[in-house]
Amino acid sequence: MTETAVNDIIATMSFWIQNIANRPGPRYKAIVAALAEDIAAGRIAHGTKLPPHRELAYRLKVTIGTIARAYGEAERQGLVSGEVGRGTFVRPPPPAAEPLPAHKPKADGTIDMSVNRPAVLDVPALAAAFEAVARHADLASLMSYGSGAHDARTRAVGASWIARDGFEVAPERVIPNTGGQSGIFASVAALTRPGDTLLCEELTYPGLKNAAALLERRLEPLSMDEHGLVPAALDRALAEGRSRVLYLMPTVHNPTTITMPEARREEIARILVRHDAWVIEDGLYAFLHQHAPLPLAARVPERTVYLTSLSKAVAPALRIGYAAAP
Image (cartoon, rainbow, N blue to C red; front, side, top):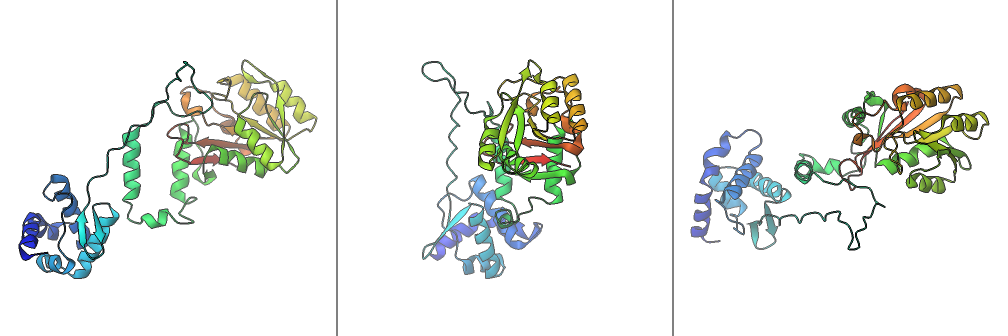
């Protein structure tokens, strides 16, 4: 790079020389912040070759190590790219994201209802959240094993998400997992053994069938009516000792969309207590019903594993779920 070219770029970067000393935090981060501002304002064009480390260090009155850290951080943030033997260049902005395909009817007018997903994704909010994660001060720790999935803050976030379903749960009772299906699998595995029978509604979530088959559990369907699971059928199955564990989706049931009324929930809770039985309560769709009665987990928390997930409420690819257990 010629002396004239360096001087032209340094003149463009005069804002740096005047202001980085007044910025809070480490000097290398101040340089990155100034670079980002100049790129956003158009003072430094995309494709511009930045000065060599030694040259910029001399002009900004900092060490070469500071410039190396600044260029490294700028590259991590996607502002620049380094090319061996050529130098460091300002990167062009990322291409605009293509709009997500709409969930439209097929040519013959039919609508595919085999997969449930949010009708409208809040793309700007998700983009901002992902950007915040990408700019995390210690991104590497989030990408490693044991990245704090069960720490106190993560459990507290899970408790606040569950509170949207109308009941409070202590953070220490929250178990993060990788989505609703993961929660079902873990709950069934914990509460039953291979060969055991698991009670469920006669129309039930297909994912439960997959989990039962993989875990070698038998499903016994129980009668339903317009209010959901029939209490007498549950009482009879428990009294006869056919099982001690029930899987239930009382709010916006899949596939019938039934929401079980208050009185029916109270009756089922009494039956569970009388027979010392457990219930895996799937609250995956509870966010759709703003005035649903309290879940069984709020009535008999000592014998309920309550499951929820962000996949249906936020985005299918966001594999985050929570279980609230005794």
